[in-house]
Image (cartoon, rainbow, N blue to C red; front, side, top):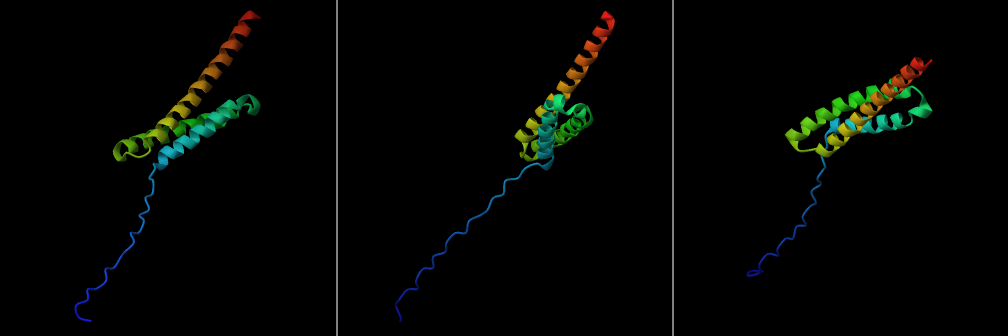
Length: 114
C-alpha cells in the first residue's frame, strides 16, 4: 500500500454552550418590586398589608436594585433588570407615601369641619 495517502479525518465541531449571566441582586430587586407593587395595588382589598409588607419589601428592593445597578456598571450584566427594579420599587414607595398623606389630610380636613 505504498503510495496511498492517508484519508483525512473529519471532526465535527462541538457546540459551545453559552450561559447568559445575570446579576442576582438586580433580579432580586426586580422580583421584590413586582411583588410589592402588586400588594400596593391590592391594598384596598387587603387592608393595611400595603404598609406592613409592601413598603419594607420595596425598601429592600431598592437596596438590591442599587447593588445590582452598581454591579452592572462594573460587569455589564443586569443593567435593565436593575433599572426596572428601581422604578417599580420607587413607584411603590412614592404611591404609598402619597396615599398615607392623602388619608391624613382628608382626616384632618374632616376634623376641622366638625
